Amino acid sequence: MADPKLYNELAKWWPLFSAPEDYAEEAAWISDAFRASLGHDPSSILELGSGGGNTASHLAGMTKMTLVDLYEPMLEVSKRLIPAAEHAQGDMRTVRLGKTFEGVLIHDAIMYMTTIDDLVAALVTARAHLVAAGVVVVLPDNIAETIEAHSGTGGHDANDGSGRGVRYLEWAHAPADGAETYEVDYVIVTRETDGSTSVFHDRHTEGIFPRSTWCDAFVRAGFAPPSVSVDPWGRTVFSARADTAR
Image 1 (cartoon, rainbow, N blue to C red):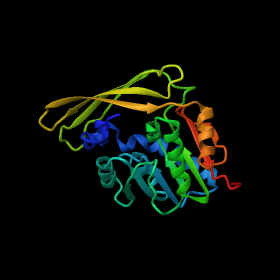
Image 2 (image 1 turned 180 degrees about the horizontal axis):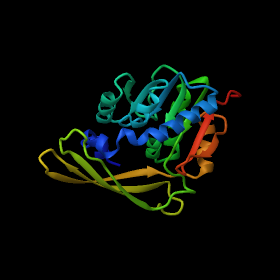
Image 3 (image 1 turned 30 degrees about the vertical axis):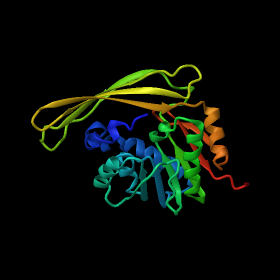
Image 4 (image 1 turned 180 degrees about the vertical axis):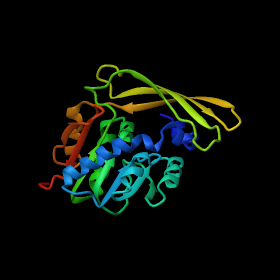
């Protein structure tokens, strides 16, 4: 898959494509999930695939955040949003920061792991960055048992009076039976300060695996079998601790 336009040449539009304030409720749920697993607020969280920092912007008030993303333009957006957080460019399958954290978070960026080996590699990275009693929380958009074709729209206008704005259509296609990937098409319309508009098409290839494959991937990566729950938005959530018996 070619690098998505959304995370590269269109990254400057990210705060209008997906506004930080839209993530407050979800971030509060994630914070509660870490607290429930650890018995306290984590002293530090590493987010792999942190994008423009929308989720982390809400978590940064409770803990020290370190953010890793593959795309430098998205990290630049995040740095402006959360200047106090530590940022590093890297691939979640291979990055090694040489430090450990009480919590590791992987949000919807995990969907870009399009093979089982990629998925295991990302979880190995999470395991490598956890303290012995730490916990990883992983929130894929979909697993094989729950995915359905769907479409939706979104976007925001700038609140600074500039006239800039973004609107988009998202169209997720159902995978073929037994497939490990599916396609998501975005049509993105941007509006500049002079009122001119541009239209972009962006296709994303994402991974899709059954629940049993997910659970096996955690074990292969050095975790105990994960706890599986469903968040208020109907998504399957995995949380796990290191397998100390190994």
